[in-house]
Length: 345
Ligand code: UD1
Image (cartoon, rainbow, N blue to C red; front, side, top):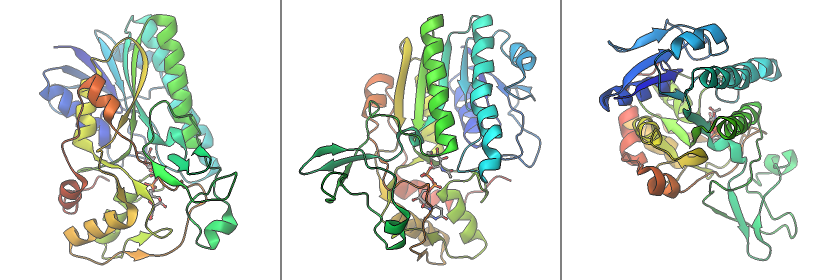
């Protein structure tokens, strides 16, 4: 049994991680500030878990929470697209300053093992290939193209059609939102820290996480939560673009299992895609959810958000090979389940 500190352990993903760590026989402490973007109620943790109700930026509280701890699973973060530029300081504060405070306190306490909640948003667009020009990193899509319904990125050299493939962990990082930029910075800070302190960091690049307890529709919610909230109020899910954009929806119980597995990652910094391995289009995801909920049918609106990327799907092969992680919930089964599962908030 190891004593693990889970930051953000009362949130959507963090509470599943906490439960999985307990089930694996670990002793768990939670540090959670019940940030208003994620919580409407005070944080709750299972019996036997020590709760430190504090912000990860609070060095003294983090110091206390690290007492007797052997590893940290860092989930505390502000996620999503946010409400706009006003959010910038809070994103950077929670995600990057928070990580810096945590890493400094870990060094002080000689805690050298970290599992970091990262995200596939660090890649920007997914992986693309042009038949004439080979691998291509598409630029952000032009508003005029989006307005005309040309949603797929094209080759910057010949303007030709691109084939979308699976993004690998060694792909260049290309953050395209404030949130994404803070996740890249977190990874870089943790990598430098691992080198300086001889630490072990497993950065888990979560794909689109969904499951029981996910938040309701807020500026910080992902599409699965937004569609689920719409269905609950008998509104049709609004599918943007043509609905053919692809993502990998990974069940929160699998994400929790990946965190447990990542505690045995090797030394140094290593990133892992955490995905189901069953990519699906956003349109098909909306259909599956509406089917399971019993309507109303989704509407494909052609609307778009400038900051969105088109396709991001990945292979979980590295996590399987190095951590022994394999997702067990297919989107078909998981989406059926969350149609009726309770939401948070
Ligand atoms: C999402 C999360 C991101 C997280 C990442 C990996 C948000 C806003 N984004 O990124 O924080 O790190 O997964 O877990 O939480 N869409 C609709 N209708 C809607 C809303 C969205 O069709 O009402 C579409 C979008 O245009 C996009 C897709 O659904 O094509 C996914 O959107 P979303 O879940 O918001 O963002 P991701 O970029 O996938």
